[in-house]
Length: 70
Image: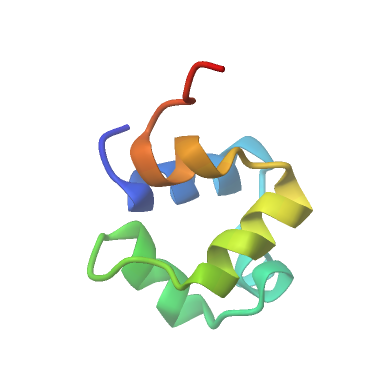
């Protein structure tokens, strides 16, 4: 997964949500989610925080594609 959009789609599919339900859970429209998954633009900080809080997503993985070593 090379892009943030691919990682967001991976989170959604891993939890077996369609775009409508998933977008409601993170507080964005289905159209915005679709655009994010297609890499038309990057998610807002608020959207990334919602992914972190609701799905325990590592922010480094979401942004960079990998976790940073401690």
